[in-house]
Length: 247
Length: 247
DNA sequence: CTGGTTTTCGTCTTCCAGGCGAAAACTCGA
DNA sequence: TCGAGTTTTCGCCTGGAAGACGAAAACCAG
Image 1 (cartoon, rainbow over the protein chains, first blue to last red):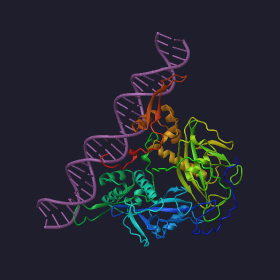
Image 2: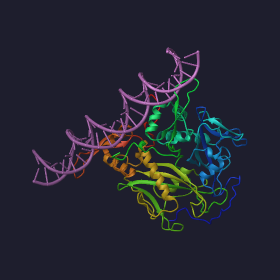
Image 3: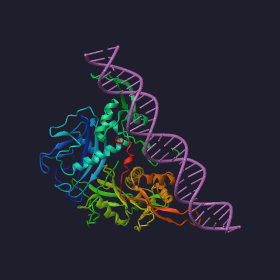
Image 4: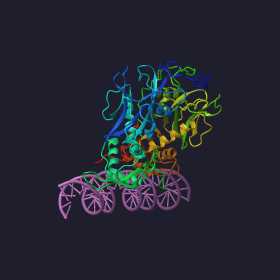
């Protein structure tokens, strides 16, 4: 039984990704990035303002056409390097791919979206058409980008529960009240610093550095500094509700 | 995690996917499906055997080229209709998109993989080159399809913990010992029927039908029949570890 | 030194899931 | 008809993890 998948000649070597929209068998493919950072205690997303139609004046996710010889993640990092320094990215993971035929007025375009995170505290230089917007109050958004930001928010919220992804939101060292503010911004609800500390310590996600910050002008006990034990994504295996027996 | 999947109507628009390989700015794009079913108490995946190079004689995931006017989910359902009846599919969600330049010897090809589920108990007619294989003992696999099956298994295992996705593995009505066998096959470890019952009842995922099956030849108390309350994906919100205050 | 502030620590309670064994309900054979 | 065997169901106990809360610690300012 012949599968649809017959192989043609290799063909497309050295294809220059023109600005034109692909219009034969292969549809155009772009990558997009939802880059989050906690800024002023709010979850914020990096957007750029479109100067040309379609969606002139609306805001869009950073991204662009997939290069002929690059992988998807590779492409996101390349395109993002024009917006934020790649080294600022503390985490990047694939989110979803959208391919509804009508999603792009300019012609059939598939988009693979990524979720990127930048630790709080740094302020990457961004181009003039680019700015951070609170994720809770999105401006006029181009294409289906508002929906993609929504997916990214849900993904981040869920992963804060059962992974150590907080490492990507927090700076290298932090106090517990800082961290609880980051979690509050990302989760959308209060998180008691005292409980957060116990939970993350028990899970082995964070550890004390031994140092502490001097108390501020208003007094108060000096806060201990913590750090995440690992800065790569790890799943809290205990989150599984139907566990294997024998624990 | 919570990948919601916005799915269009099933509409199998008769798009003739041309056999030509895309070779302009847009790379070729295909959709793949990891279709799982519990068969003989084993998690099994639907594969077809390639008769032509590359990977002649190896097994591949069902799928094919994305049609010019169809959405991604739409395309998967259309292509799957040739392998299993679309109405057999109890669940379908997007899994991941792979785009490494070298993943397809025949030329640059992006692939968006989906996770599909078929309830236990039915036996869809499949083409002659197509067969079910235990997911734990995959045969020689083409391309990166083995890795994709691995992703699908992990996704399914995780979602069994914090969603009601069991509805897609089980037949409309089932006994608790049946259901615990399905969970065992999918999770890879024992699941006590007595605990599973309490957990799923507490979560409101399943309910008693009131009827029961007569006990078998070997005797034993007749088993009550249960069903899932809803047959669409719902997230168990209580799974979140960092919950909002006030419960 | 005292009052105010912030962080830290310990305790209490609650919830939920796994383990286990007794009871229930049925078949089969004597 | 009665007892042995089998399978399911139910109730109780236990352990673990997390939210709530208040006391104690550590610091500043006046």
